[in-house]
Image (cartoon, rainbow, N blue to C red):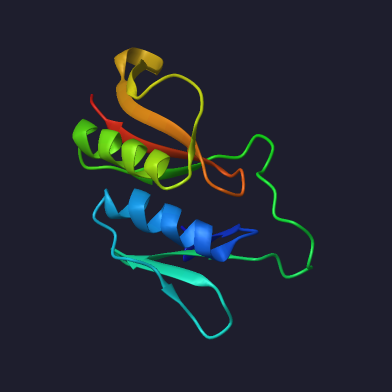
Length: 127
């Protein structure tokens, strides 16, 4: 469904340090800054892009929006959370762990805010 996802950032260097660490914990290669200053992450046929807003206004986190990254295990979720915290992210909501969702399904997840305030989640489906 998606060709790419793009989030805004106010500090490209801080965002690159954060996403290189957090996404690296999920096996995503380090991002590259392209000729127009965007950080581009390419992995498994998808692209995730971080850039300063085109309109020149400050980047802000989307109210009610969350970007979820698929993890391969609960250990990857934990590693993502720890790496993101150590690279300038902010812990939000409950600590990493199992959540019961609908109809007996369980997920293991964790939430962070990136340096620009975007709400992120690492997600692993337990059952």
